[in-house]
Image (cartoon, rainbow, N blue to C red):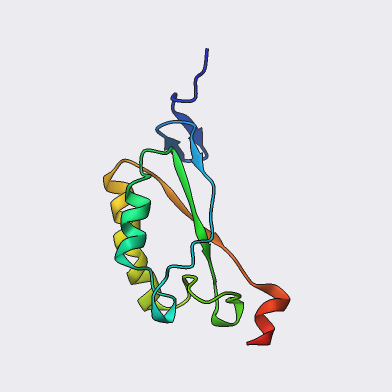
Length: 109
């Protein structure tokens, strides 16, 4: 019988278990949409989940709908996410970025 703690094959990726952490908007990014050390700690603490879906990250500046949300559209933002992803990987976890665009709301900026 398959259990929640059995590994799972997702495409080319083998997840250590079938637990998936759903994304949550946290609004704790730093200036310029940079991931912070507290974000790295948050995701590291959850690395035992089979898969983590990150909080929404905007793929462009115009796509940001709320202050404090992280971006993933500049080299600096990509570099700021590296400690968080490295911490998850060091804990044996897997993490996917949830791309988010604010849509119509973002045009009011």
